[in-house]
Length: 335
Ligand SMILES: Cc1cc2nc3c(=O)[nH]c(=O)nc-3n(C[C@H](O)[C@H](O)[C@H](O)COP(=O)(O)O)c2cc1C
Image 1: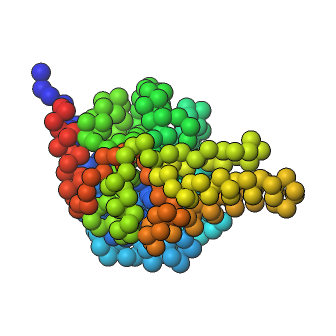
Image 2: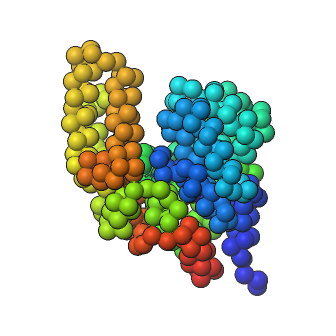
């Protein structure tokens, strides 16, 4: 019997992305800029620019910088609640971006259609089967399922459970839709496991933070190298009336301060100083500022060091190409 090769296992993913390997580097605010994105794509993977809170003008420049560094395909990750989402989509259209990832909440059909109109493929996060149906109906071309082991903002369900729930469902009902699995993947053996379950590829974030090409501050990288899986903890919601999206980060002063931010925001909410939406935005702004402080300024005590549980498998600073090669070799050894 002939062996299944890695190329066969993830062909739907590589065809969809237009890459050699179906490994996406998930967008990471402040980290996933032109240097890292281009390095990942030049190494055969798929880099994704993190637009985050960037203005359309800044995104325009970031795309230009990335295109100057790579001829290979890469994507742009847009946050659905960005107040200038339409303008950001127009910037992607101007640069003929081939893939747009919509993150941070359920995207509207209008946003999905606006992206498809200029010929790009739309990738959406699917946290549950009910949303898979809705997203596919709205026109999503591919899905990412991201488990709670991941770094940054997370959902409540682990990668292994999401994979068991969603991969067979998509294979059965929407076999044309590629699904990329994210959250807690640090080695190639795990990639093979998800591909065998029906995934078309994977998305990693944490494992790429210490790429040589990543501009993350050296303090940020050093803390990644030092940290173990148990150090990357999820934030806890303190007030049932103030829903906050949990964030996984290395425990430090910032993770403690976040509890105070929640307490202050929830009393402001109770006193009627802010409404629920403003309160949630305030909480989100806290994270954006805190992440910048750690990634850019290197303040890893008071800033937010967002990291997934796979941080324990980050051992050194190495070129993006070497990280991808390691993952491939581990995957191949498993086949
Ligand atoms: C420092 C950091 C920042 C992140 N920022 C974003 C972001 O801005 N937008 C987003 O969609 N995902 C963000 N993520 C999630 C990644 O894109 C990716 O899905 C995740 O890291 C995959 O799980 P892993 O960390 O276990 O590899 C971030 C992750 C990290 C570690």
